[in-house]
Amino acid sequence: MPDALSAPLVVEFPFTRSLGPVQSAFLTGLRERTVLGVRTAGGKILVPPVEYDPVTAEEIRELTEVAATGTVTTWAWNPAPRPGQPLDTPFAWVLVRLDGADTALLHALAAPGPDAVHTGMRVRIRWAPERTGAITDIACFEPYDGKDTGQSAPHDGEFTGPVTGIVTPARLDYRYTPGRAQSAYLGALSRQRIVGERCPSCHKVYVPPRGACPTCGVATAEQVEVGPRGTVTTFCIVNIKAKNLDIEVPYVYAHIALDGADLALHARIGGIPYDQVRMGLRVEPVWTEGGRHPDHYRPTGEPDADYDAYKELL
Image (cartoon, one colour):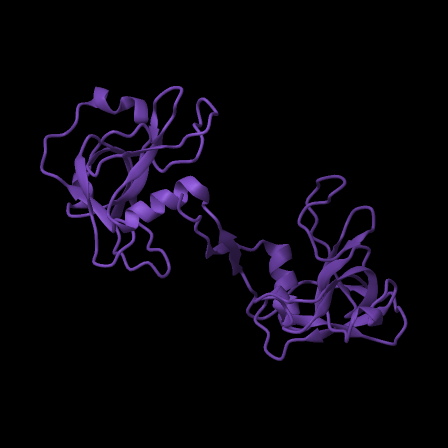
């Protein structure tokens, strides 16, 4: 039995959102070294601000400026910062109730060690040297020996050049171990073969194999070579270019039922104008030199498959 594979993987995408008047004022305020919250109908000042009262669900717009100093309400030590976190040396994650606010703000606290952090300690904002209108305009918190001022004052939220939208990168780093069945599948792909596994109960062949039949729930072990040709069962036209993907838009991504398989896999369709791709189109894989998987699928030139031949795999 081949060794199971393992590899580091990264899932990353930019999340873009527009800002309403409350969030716009909050982030623009950070750029100007001003911290704003909102006052609810019950008189509570919420920092960070929200647009709707968490108790009554009513819209809230009354902005209030609070102090850049505050008190740690709880904390956790981070001994090994990850890429993209506020500090590159060990630090504490802290919830800080800023003076004048009734809720706490989550951020990093620069401290020499966990013994230097405690609930109730006084801290202040360390502003980033360059600020753009983001939560990272607060570089971190740092210890502060002053008293709670309880400072708050109404604010109109008006700034020159307000921030109206943000792009937040979302990133997940993890190690993927596909297991016995998919390790064998990936190994076969590197040899330009496509293998699945047959269920001993229902006899369906699944590609990629999962190590167990999703219908019967029993383990699968019998390898079956399928394809390499197949049939397009359904597809979509991609019109937005992905970052770091050197493929011109528009292009087509399709579900393909390989000959001999009972599960459709997805792949890109090439070698044909995007507006000529259709259900039932017969395709075959195209391998690049040194590639460990098909680069794309292209038409075989065969007549289209009858709908009845693939309708169960839609």
